[in-house]
Length: 485
Image (cartoon, rainbow, N blue to C red; front, side, top):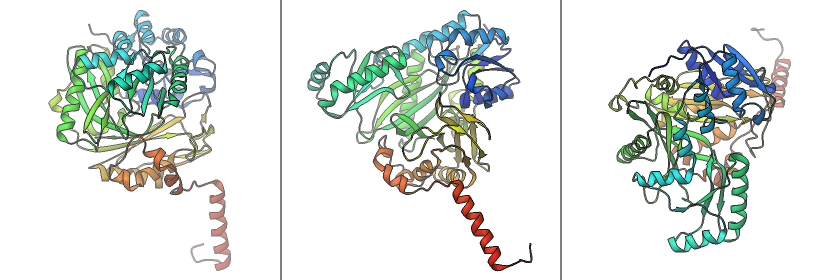
């Protein structure tokens, strides 16, 4: 049954909230922002038609408080909720609470979110659907159990100990040898309990120098399940993505068709609706890929898929939630560009330590082939309570080399951020590295090349600006009055 959306509450902050608000503006759908006390002057608050204060800084008192968010929807007369990404986006209890409150949930069904949120069950379902899975063991309780599995299955170190209910790189510990098993298991269990409230653990063979590839899916409630091709998110640090691109430089035509077909088949079999992503790890030496997980939400990097396919994924999520059919078939999707995305975090590029404070100066890149998804403005404050991501910078070109050139221009010539440190110098070093340009990267690229990457950049400071002005004044003083003065 079709239901018309009158107003959307965006249950998020920063970049994801602003991103969703842009599509709502395009569609002439009014929006409600929710905000914590330190976010009262945040960009997403100004972007929305109405805003509701939902609590103090700690996420548990604001952005993770289900009752307050649903109450804010009723107060603001919003009849739909979009969760963005992060916070409650993959929380099946939140999705169910939204539906139970008589509101429209813009996302996959609570049952599917719950099913795919359990990594052990998701892997079993994928295996039953003939999707290749990484050799592993579930319901791990002690280190001896891991040793016996490794011996029986002929698995060698390293291995990955991970939270069954995990995601976003949390609750994942790599063990290189026997001595690290007990401590790694304890650490993973502790992180899992803290982040997800569930200390169930699974262990998998670690794919050394793997490539991280994910397939974007969009599906409606009428049985139409379509892929929008793949993205590669291999460049990561501690399992957190830093640079993403679409398409993947690793896959050839046949592998691309195979991985996209398998992802589509899996989502069809689990009855998926809305936007979602099937993640795989690709083992380069064997040219085999293995199922990792299903992300039951809008992905941070969805923008580059929008750039190569020409569709608005957030807009499609809104349509699907109202019961509409997808307006195209699989044969209509033809990627005609290459796109890159870098994540600009407020972090020290030398050691990734957080850098919070006020953005005293902000100049954003412009020009052909550039797209910005920003959660801030000049003068905005980046508080220490939340994720350090404040901007996504995307670049497109006719091919990969062209897209890299555009990204180089955007990072090196047009971007200026002062008041906080950012990853921009590191990102520029990466995209200029010969191995990246050649497409020869792995999930360990950053840790293996960190010293070299740091040596390639120099962070400009306010002292540099003062010295530049002083040098100019000195030159004019020495030369005397000029004709143009």
